[in-house]
Length: 253
Length: 151
Image (cartoon, rainbow over all chains, first blue to last red; front, top):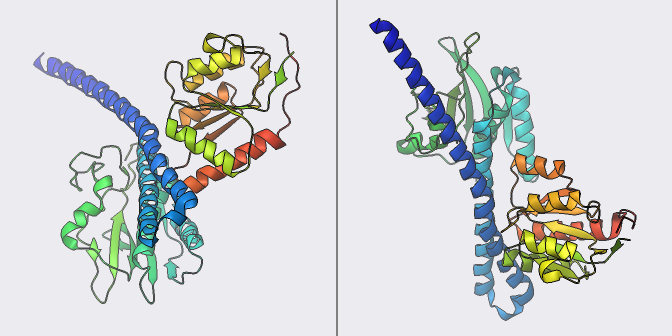
């Protein structure tokens, strides 16, 4: 009797929570919608009119004035890109997971080629291991690779002999993927923050998130924070390791 | 009989965007007259010769309507819906020019009969480029619907 009641209570609580979750999701959707509309409009004005000033009134400004205006317009454009990235991530978080076998090597080569095309003059050695695959959502994995390879690309920009590597190791039956580069490093003290936008996804609780970014997440990229995350030993190499959860038959990640 | 003016109807409530769009067209040597409506109601008044536009020859239709989505009074989709439901305006080319790339906005716009959907870029040179291409395409290249229709 008591058991039946508690089962019913449990079901009611669960229904309440599901309703709450749906409501929060709708709120977030409305939020990202208004971000997409409202935040870009003033930015366009800042970028647009500083460009208009540069084009039409450049002769009335001295070098310093033109430099300042150039900075204003570059910053506005950068902020536009940031907003786009944020919205992109929020959409990624909303989408249903579609797991299947993904050719990580091919995907990484595609991402690397895109990066190369943004700066054809750059000479970087990018080594992608052959035959790397994963059970994952291809779209999400692409976002992960774009982020990680994009960072490696960025942080090796001032490196005399830039080298970027992607591969996989097996540790205790688990595939541990890594991206490694010899560019500028990051302070291990803040390693946790590197994954802040992904962190609230920590379904297994392995990444501690503060919950501020419930949408900007990569739900299938769980254990970004591993003991191995961060600075690798031996020379100036910086590693990011991550694993993907092993699929449970019939279950979601 | 519907006749077409060489005008562009810009439906846009943000004065900065109005100015930037005008400038972009001017920079691209597109000299067509631009009528600006600040909200959806004003746009419909212009098109149908009602309200403040009572007496306008409503058989004269703009060559293209550049329509923002988020507008006071009647929003862009509302304007589009009304335009497509009316014999006089149902074939007038409508380009959605907006900040939103929300999929539902894009899909709904096309479902309601928009001819094109363009996102306003933050980068001004891109914006100017988009305006130039819009002008070239809709004012020069595009073959407009035949000038006939029931009065």
